[in-house]
Image 1 (cartoon, rainbow, N blue to C red):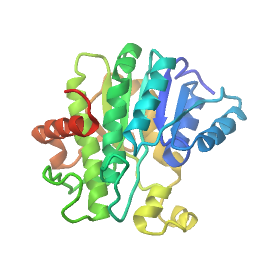
Image 2: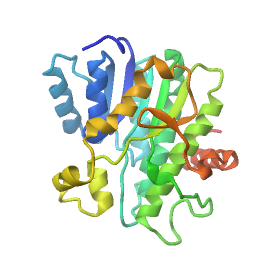
Image 3: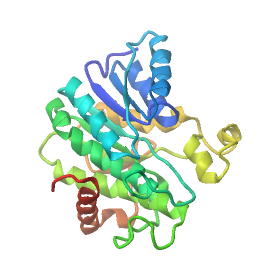
Image 4: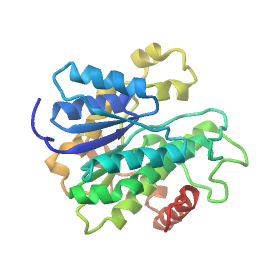
Length: 283
């Protein structure tokens, strides 16, 4: 273990498996205090015990169903009560659904989990991140955002649903959100960046490829290990090289160009306003 992240409090969503778990493991190794945001407590506790067995302080487990806004509100309140300062927020959890599904809030599931959960949790924790000073907000997008465009008259995919297209649009929303957040954070000392982790062998990749029962085969044939996917996340969370850098899209620990649509500032503002309405946040 090193002390690069000693005293830094990091919140990671989807931390019980895949890229999220690998990121948590790496940040604990760097000395960070890690909060594992997981849908099921037993899954988070298993990760916490595994890290404690390696000599780390057992990370705290925060239970949150990111498809339910009430659950996100409860999780944020729990975090806020126990941690007056936060230093890193990693919006990582994501889903892929081939058929259109609705959440308990009546929202299309991919848009709700992959974008609105990022938006809501970030805004709920923003003052704690500001108290941490030079805090970093990191959102996991995907190269799948390329070629996508948002239809603001049909953000919920009601007029004809295609799971792959809905996923790509949610990942474009991650980039638009990051760039707009970075603009709003100018002068605060906080930064916001997003990234493409690569094609990684995770449950999401298996679902995306339509082979959810063959995750091992997907891992060995198509995707890199989750540790590889975590590299850019951990870099953005910890490296002195990106101190003060904001509003960028990263691939393989290097800034890269995102899609043309992602630089549309009017679309980013419109998405922000729509997200406020859909989450009930005041403008």
